[in-house]
Image 1: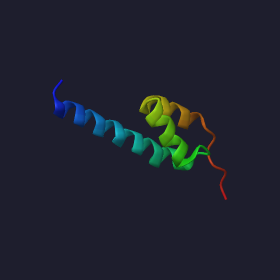
Image 2: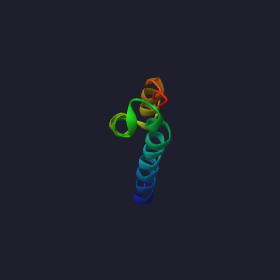
Image 3: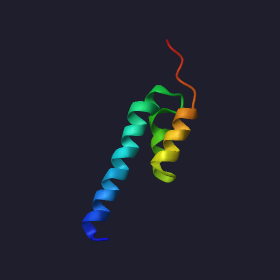
Image 4: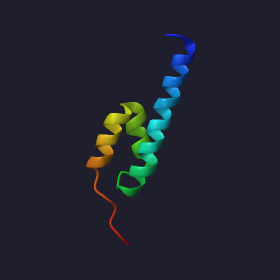
Length: 60
């Protein structure tokens, strides 16, 4: 792999992690911060599963 492939892969990884946290995590009890944490530490796919398993926020 050349350098550009690594850079593109890294940027896509961070973008996918952000999308999971912003659109799904903020609507769940896990929240934005923990959703980002799980997505970066493990992988965006496992972060997505962990976020979906979390309970939705109670309506006010």
